[in-house]
Image (cartoon, rainbow, N blue to C red; front, side):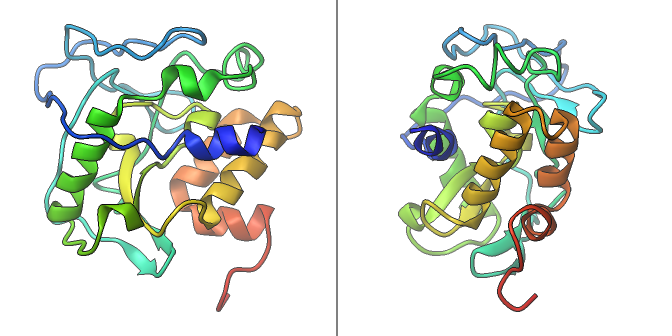
Length: 209
């Protein structure tokens, strides 16, 4: 059940979206029991203790000239396009009432209308061919580790179906964090900076490694 919830946190699809750019206000936190609702203002990002940024509550930006690094399902997003962003409601002191509480990811997951349209736009901008069903609109820092739900700085078109190797890593890190065996910020930095290296550290060797 827990694994299914973690995998579901990065797999929503749909049809339409709203774009926000420029002159941005402070981020709006999504609380542990608050369903996702687009705000009326346009929040932005700011620095956090994790070396990542607080995520915008609802932002869709599609940079150009983005590239994937790697091949097959062992690929990394372009860090200049998807650096990762965090939900400011999730901190090391709130994990028991946020990410580790049953149903957290389902409550704060963005609507399919946002993620599916963003995926199509990103695939075109990043030069990815093929069916959208074979590309996951993935949260680089997963919802289960306090990733920003609906900030495009935390979303990227990950090749491959569901589940995939990154999903396995996400669940492993989630269990370590919620069992208080790994600091939340360390888990967030590991998956955001290079999830393949994190996989090798927490799961085991990757093909060809």
